[in-house]
Image (cartoon, rainbow, N blue to C red; front, side):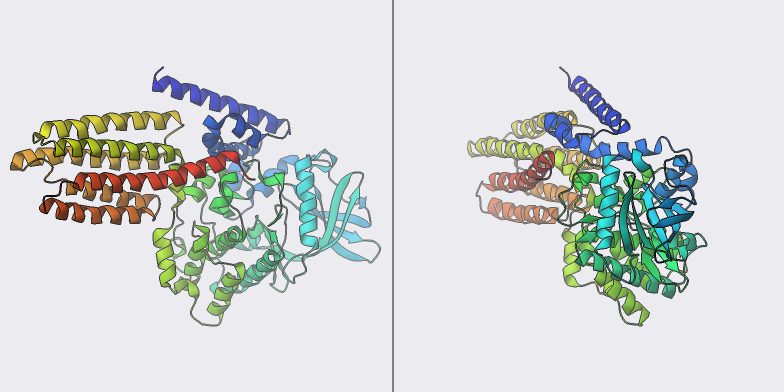
Length: 565
């Protein structure tokens, strides 16, 4: 059976599995995502990559106002999409819910609706939140709603909207919160960017509140301008913990591969679904997106659809704020960009560190985002790029490639030791032999799923190195040099390939590049002394350069297939 037929069958099977998952989603049934990964390991990587985007697209399929939402730079996508549920079973105004008399609707989100209500027994004005779908809510939404109430009930901070009471009426849960009279940051940003000092002061308070929640084990996971209330005194209050999660939580709510949050304001690891490790650094990233919007009037990433926005979050770097708004403050730009680093370890370690930098800015002191500490420079240089996850598809193949290199170098050394001086046997081995293996390698990669753009770029670099190997023999013949005189150039060519990979995929490949460049010098030194072991040395070093990262990414792929413990 041809590789093209195998690839077609793979795509058909993948489409069928995605269709089955989508049907379950439409029926509000558990998707059994982890179970499907175990049953179909050959499709697991593609399912993990595509399922989150499919869920997001499915959620938008019934939303007529989606295009209008995305034209608004700071509006809340999920909030507007929920307007299609106007006929949901929620509390009408003037209805009594427990100890509360509903007065007016304040707003709606992706899961809940908030009313202004009067508490009868005290009396006082409160914000009353109920599930948007009422008693028709799915078990997952019920669980998230209760998780929000539990998360906020344990938080007591001046910049977090407190929960007063949690209750239930006719099977429909609700909870009451402090009523904040004022506006939201989203409405404020609809008028354009904020003054620099106002933005820094407001976000510093928000960052302190988020750090307070983190210290008590609560992640927000949906920080955005519409979830920050501004009272009449200009003070910020964090609200809507609907996607909140405790650090130690072993919840099935987040193990389905779903993308939870608002695309323009979510961290890359959050946008990656169950392939990402969401933690406090994810909230720090979201705070950076809010600061970016305060400086520019728009989030760092927005596209024609939420799915395209997710792809931008995963793949692209944000434009510096001063390229969007020339009047944006330089120091605040640096703070925002530090928050928006794709590797979590390059962001602020905590939300408190972010608040410290914002307060240092307000005090006219130097900020740590400009420090450029040597350790940060090294970490940035050797960090793994966000595209490096594609190497999980190459791990096992690189391990086989290391064996192929060892075999070719061993055969080359045997011919050299036996006194073969004609260049043609070597040329055939290194061009036809290595070329045949490259063809097999590429066919095997195609069978494991669709090939991404970054993989094609790496393959082109590899093909260029193979062409340079062929030209070595041609140059030796033209110059009349003994065969393999230019063999140290093999290590230089291979080192250049790893240098390119370091810039595109992972800074760790700088080590392989350096090792191969040093190997070229040692090969030349050995050759000058008549020791014909230089090719074997190249084989060992180059094989190790492929085998070790191959083993790492193969194990990483297996862990992803097994899922969380």
